[in-house]
Length: 510
Image (spheres, rainbow, N blue to C red):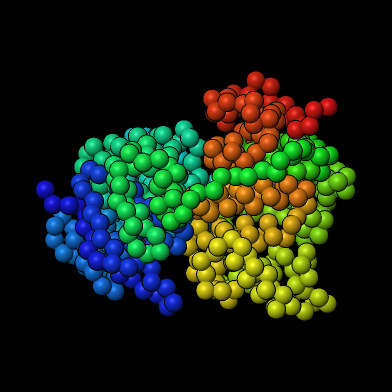
């Protein structure tokens, strides 16, 4: 039987970058095949050529043994290639049903399409109301739209780019069941992920890229997560190093009975949340997507202001009535989960994006005039310190790969040395080496005296990084507990809403 997909000597160049350098590998029918590599290793470029978004400069693509030229995504879908992108291609003002309809190559009556959508959702456990407006959905819920849209095409090859980056462990296992069922039916799956324990659990084969070149093809079940990570980065993987004799200081960030008003029909507001983060502490908040995480971050950052000035304090200073600029001046920096459009403006240069958040703290604007030299110098330091693969401070944010944009955004905030840092999904879509570097930077920031709040759906990340942990469910926060005293099973129950007492407790014992 011929290979479902075969790449032979694929090469793709961009100005100043050789994205793919003579890459060859194949995927068999029914195989779940991982494509691994650092951010900027060439994975996304490669799958965009398979999906017809780009054309290779040289090399050959074969489909079921026959050479093909995939002119565009419609031609790819006609062959039977579906793709779930890391960055969602959705119109926020439209409903789930309308977005899916726009992604279909033939017009299907609305009632029939809704019936097919509900069948797919029911079959694969991807439940979502087809009539909800996308603007009201969490990132995790938006991911489900992309997956359903791809499955509606009954693909022969399904490409998945970081599909679990915003899913809970329970949702990941549901997705894996879907993918294993598809593979058993003969569908090939090309799976891109930086979560190497998932690769080991799911995939039959792994192709590893580094610097645009193929460096290894291996059986992930015969490898360790660490060995695959080290092949990806070409060096040893560093463990988190914490300062010896480390102790937590006095309360720095204190949240008292913080609530927000429901602004959208489906939005989950924050309900009477209280917690305390001490100097040097990393406080983790876990939860299923769509349970108030966005409202919490907006309320902490100042995008949503409280009616109570004392609802949020830093070192005893009340911030509740201040906007984002006022809170940044008092030392609070924040990173939202949605990097495109919220954390960064795609069409702005990296320097201009630095000005957007660091202008006051780092003196980039004086008497209404922008100090472009200071912005470029600072942006260059972010690029260097966080190994951001970009052509320089003048590069637009939209020209970076997803993982490199995340590294830039995290570096931009961490290097401001905030008194308090609130970050949602800090390592979303970044490779193992970059995730380790971001984790170390957060630990170092805490060791220097900052208080850090990490909102994440990655339980492994929270358990490795945080001192204290709580779970958010339907806008309410569970009692905070030291990470070493709570099991994954307990966290899962809390994420599902089994709280016992849902009254939120402070992180510092009375």
